[in-house]
Image 1 (cartoon, rainbow, N blue to C red):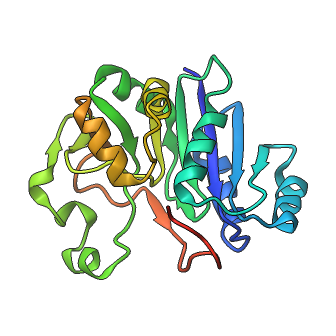
Image 2 (spheres, rainbow, N blue to C red):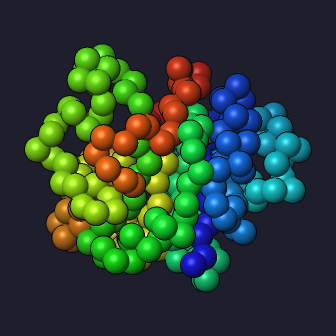
Image 3 (spheres, one colour):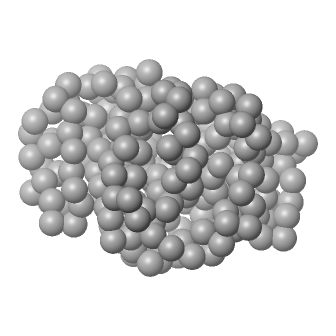
Amino acid sequence: MNVALVVVTDGRAEYLPRAVNSLAQQLRPYPEFRYVMDDSGDANYGAFLREAWGGEFAVRSHFEREGFVATVADAWRLAIQEPSVEYVFHAEDDFTYNEPVDLGRMVAILDENPHLAQLVLKRQPVNGPESHAGDITRMDPDAWVVHPTFTEYTRNFSTNPCLIPRRVIQLVLRERVATAEMALTWFLQEHGYTFGYVGDIDDPPRVQHIGEHRAEGARYP
C-alpha cells in the first residue's frame, strides 16, 4: 500500500492549520508523500505555506487563481508523480477528522471492489435541506446501498475527503475531464464506476466541514 496525501487550499489561513494538524493526528499510517496545492494566487500566502509546512509537505502554488477545477487536477498530477503511489487521499483545507482514518482498511475495500471510483468520509449536514433531513444519507435514500464494509452511493462523485485509486485519477487526467463533481460523476459512470462511503449508512460523520466562508476571490470553475 502506497498512499499520497494532497491538500487543496485557496488562501484560508484560518482553517488550514486545523485541517493539517487533524490529518497528521488521524491518518493512519501518515502518508510518506504529502503535497499542498495552493490556488490563492497570493505570494504571501505561498510563503506562509512554505515556512509553516515546507518541511512536511511539498508545496506548489499557482501564480494567480486558476479555480477549483484546475487546482484539483494539478493536485492530482502532483500526487501521482511518484510512480509507486497507488492511491491518493484527497483533502481540502476546511475539514477536520473526527476519528482515526484507517487507510489500510480503505485500500482493502477499494481493492475488493474495483467498481468504486472512491471511498469518501461522511461529513455532517451543512445546508438547510441536509440539516432538515438530519443526515446527508437521508437526502436521497434510494441512492444508498449498504454493503458489509462500505455504503455505495450511486448518484455522484464527491471532492470531500476521500481515497481514490491511481488508475481512476490517471483515467480522468488522460481524458482531460473537468474535476468538477458532476463532470467527474458523468464520466466515471460512463466507465462503469460508482462511489462509496466508509462504513454503515447510519454511522456518525467521520469528518467535520469547518469552512464557514469561501476565500475572497475564490473561483469554482
